[in-house]
Image (cartoon, rainbow, N blue to C red):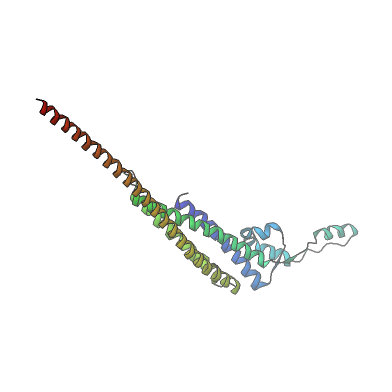
Length: 235
């Protein structure tokens, strides 16, 4: 997948993270109760958009109706069970979106490393160097801005739980990232050493083949010279 497409996917995830942070902040600061359904817990984006609509519907008084035996049953049907917002589920969903965002970020970093390695080792006369450079720079700038957006959503005017979660996640990500970078460099070093050893074996084999051919040539030359000397003596 090209860098621009990866950034578009990442931007969609960031919007979901923002929506989850907004819903969590509203639940913490306004003590709002909403109907707990699977769609409302999982689809945080839809929950954030319809938040105030649910709030108005929940606290608006029902219009007065004449009491009658027949009307009592519909009133019983409209009675719904409301529970408090599942804050842990909201945090879990934010974390899930963060994990997806980090995966896309790693894909972009791997793509950029691959393209840089290809540009150093493979000559392509048809390559558009300016286009490749612009795509890399633009994609990296967009990804950096998305990281800033996540930090703002989880720290600015947000409950302390979100700020603490942001700090812990990104601190752990730095640790894991450093470990993975060290592992990647180690693997690259091993691969380069194996490639060098393979090239050395090929060079040694070619040298042996060359030496063998040269030896055969010398033997053939000496043999012809001996034949010439023997023929000269018989004259």
